[in-house]
Length: 439
Image: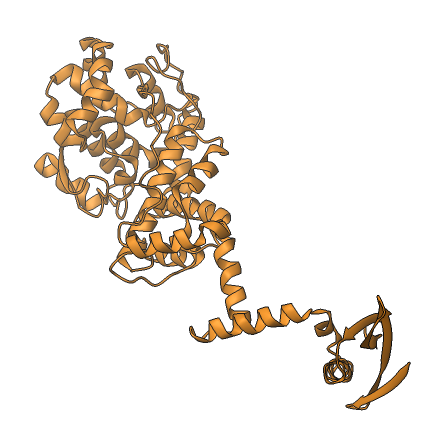
């Protein structure tokens, strides 16, 4: 047995020359003992030059502290060299290619589907290029464009966006598919109305992303998701005796807001934007002009001032001739305070609040008394479809006498702020065929 030493980079490795006989034929091999991994590994080579090359490789790995490379078999090195040669044609290094492949597989595409997915993309990719953005970035840019909306609408959209970002925020905006959103909604205990409105809100976000080139044209994962069917809403109204009770007991600075709501049927947000000069002008002309920025839902319109509404406004202005600014005082009109107004009204009046009851009452009794659907549509800014859906049947459930009493309600308040000493009138059942709630 002959021993040969190989010294390279300050490391010495011994090679043993071993001769054995098999079936009487002598065979010589060169064995290299490798302790670089703290375990004895024996490498065999058929000739001395190959054995010395392997020994030098082990010496270099030990000297450079890269002993993990010694665990590669020769065929592994061949694979690495082959991969590097292939990638060189595409100007990619092996680590870059590995990361790219891992990212592609991370999207949920299986390795055997990867080529098919690429071919599909080539066949269907948009002609117009887009700039990929994360959901978090798109959400910030989308909300920045909503400053023209009302504060209340902005809060609602912000909630929709926050929920979406919490679930998908670390994803690319063009990488979300409709089935993922559907699966997300299936685990939410939302009402059909909330679900539909959330989908519409996120759909607006994707329309903005399309416009700004963050996703391909016509890419909107919310578009194909079927909206849930809504059950027909059952509106609630106040009877004349209940309206009297509310107006007798409510705080006096809320009266102008309330009587416009009850006797003109304007929307709460619209009345909150009205100013006293508009009211004074309406008393002269007989019509209240709602500006485009005040009627944000339906735009500009003119509503007729009913006789009892005129009486209420003249009564209030006689008591407060210097009334100026907004009809609804700022202390009720800022931020979330507007949402709490109905709670204050319910507390003062000692009546459970009927959601949007003043507007519903006006529409129902107006249709009953005047039977003039076109005039009502012009006054309140509704569509004929909404009128038929919500008020046509309801108007048949009340009497003409009730409607006459409703539009004959005139100011008879005592000179007290809240009117708590006013006896509570005998009132009929609260809301006709409706479920009431405290707002």
